[in-house]
Amino acid sequence: MFSILKRASLAMLSLMTALLLALSLPVHAEQNESQVAQREMTQLAGADFWRQVRQGEEGYTTSQSAEHGVLISTPGQTWYILKEKWMSPAGAVAIFGSIALVTLMYVAIGPLMLSAPRTGKKIKRWSRLDRALHWSMAFTFLTLAFSGLMLVYGKHFLKPYIPSELWGFIVMLAKQYHNYIGPIFYALLLCVLIKWWRKSIFKKVDFDWFIKLGGMVGKHKGTHPSAEFSNAGEKALFWMLIIVGSVVALSGLILDFPIFGQTRRDMEMSNLVHMIAALILICGFIFHIYIGLFGMEGALEGMVTGEVDETWAKEHHDLWYQQVAEKEQTFTESSEISQQRKGAQTNEQTS
Ligand code: HEM
Image (tube, protein in one colour):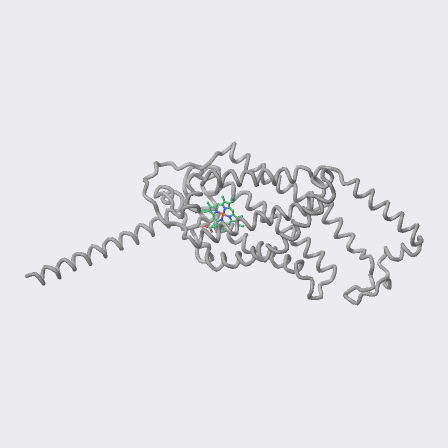
């Protein structure tokens, strides 16, 4: 089960890498097409007429919607440049950078192994509902990331190499998938917030965990700073998911339902915000996936089976382990007392 998950995620990471590798390919073909189109329009419509249209002068359409008189939205060119010339390459650098960093972490630091042998005693950590929520969210997130990256980068690395009909089909599929599955991810995000917010509240102990960088690097490497059910890193990841995820959700809904009088500016702004926020999430979760899959011995089995080894619980979440142990002891003591009482009652009745 673990190896299937690991392989699937490795495949997903490799696909993402391959998807982005082609970014460096030239966009000249597109620019040439646009120059030819401009020349043709000038010849057809006449230079003066075409200049007026291009400068965004009103009066070239019968539509009654917002900005109805503007055939070509000149500020839209700024959006296009920001998206294609800045955001898109910066996003690729950020994603490649994150993948390179986790690879470096793996090579230089290696996975965090348990420092004591496993006791074999299993402790319940994640319920069936928790796991169902986590994996549905992970699946929707990763497939949305994949289809979103296809929409942004596919024209550079795939379009030039496949028949245009096939490209049209793939990009249409990516768009429809993104449009329809996006709201499901937002609903799951809300469920995760309701289910996990309590255990993600920062406490004093979390600052110490941050100062010691979780015992992963620096002079505290190899130590295990105290942690509750979630350590400070997990809490930070949780709130990043909720806050940045909400920005992705809101901007995505504005784009998904352009029926509330949104102007072109609103759509362009939402598009940029959606892209930046989604990139932050993707980069953040590259680290999470690395830790879950390769970076920490024993973490993945908790999210797959629901149970973790006692040694893992003691080392990584000592305060939570103490709580569980205390509860267990109280339960054993109270069941011993009730058994003794039952025994005494039976003795009284027989005598
Ligand atoms: C292949 C992909 C993934 C793997 C292998 C993975 C693995 C894990 C593991 C092992 C845990 C449990 C850590 C613990 O017990 O302390 C966990 C927790 C969590 N995961 Fe993932 N995960 C993946 C993808 C995702 C994605 C895509 C998201 C969100 C979009 C996500 C969100 C979370 C959250 C919010 C937690 C709870 C952290 C906490 O507050 O304790 N995971 N994940």
